Length: 128
Image 1 (tube, rainbow, N blue to C red):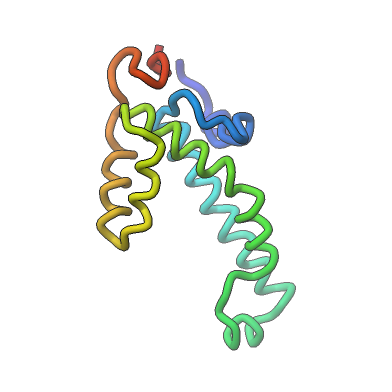
Image 2 (image 1 turned 60 degrees about the horizontal axis):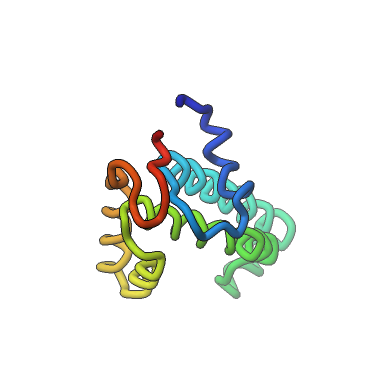
């Protein structure tokens, strides 16, 4: 089932608020790349629209980047929960990310790990 990168980038948006089921590594990581590229683009747009002096005096998220973050907040959490489900972990493990450095590192390792083989308590194997 070789699907193009664009499919995997947009799949979390098609499943905007779906927290059940499983997400393959491809779905999670291609979406993460898309989100990162959009964040860079909107940060540049904030810089162009609002200027460097304003961003230097108030180093916070610009309004355009902030709107992107709000728009993608739910699908980002949803694909993260589904990725945890693919590794046979509860979606509540997403809270591990609140622990500085160590929590993010553990989540990163889990997100890089291949999902459980066959069906698990969260659904059938998305690899087929």
